[in-house]
Image (cartoon, rainbow, N blue to C red; front, side, top):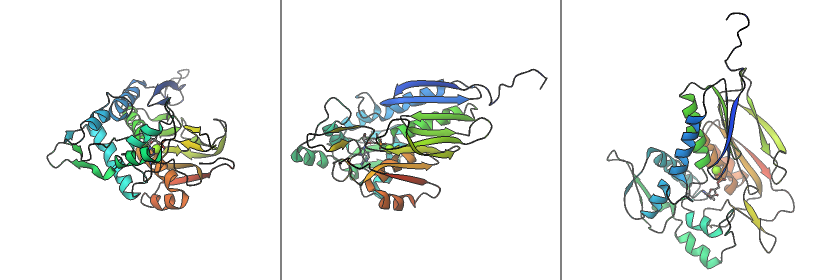
Length: 308
Ligand code: AMP
Ligand code: MG
């Protein structure tokens, strides 16, 4: 390179943009050039496919088609395969069919409230993940909800899967260094300019947003945390009601944890595992993770004085 010519490689200033998507604030940062548009397109596609809240999403269409075999997109198929695998391995503690129960609690919406035991019982009858049937033997990806009351909710893996697809879109266009932060759900592509790993903070549960319990150094991996401090309200009895339900009972999980973080190669899997680990608690969570060598978890305790 001739003297005086400034390198436009990985040392160039990063390009960063924040947008509201997937029900949260999403930031994408790319080093070394390359536009962000392909990544945002992937996020948009994930939202149109997987959102349980948007009545026009593909998932909502599948929920309405209850009882009939329905052809689904490769992305929805991938999400369902992962979610059902986690449901099987956790005996339903992770439950992608919790839509009726999550809608009943409405945590994070204007309608959040504590449902009656009768309402919850009714919702749990419609939360039977074993009624999700998948069949691609004909070459088409077909899904059927044999219990027509079932409402799928893929909120526990959606952000991680979207981050994977957005990172893939960047990588396929030659981007080697990027950081995707979808509401604290982190996916790294490559390493920082110069080759150093990214330093990712793990929040102290219920502390200020920028207060970290520790940091982890990663390249090309995901770091995903699930915790009750993300969406919650305190009920009349002083009990904190949050958005991560025990998939077997439909009641907010209370395994004694302030958060569960999973670090590994795959945003969707880390996202699902973090939710599953939060519900299961540290001991069973660590057992679950043994099936994925190379994946690691950080479990942080619930601060004193918080009742779940
Ligand atoms: P996350 O923030 O990734 O832990 O996911 C929490 C979201 O996943 C909730 O807002 C619900 O939409 C959904 N969800 C809640 N409890 C469960 C569960 N036990 N299994 C699967 N999905 C769940
Ligand atoms: Mg999750």
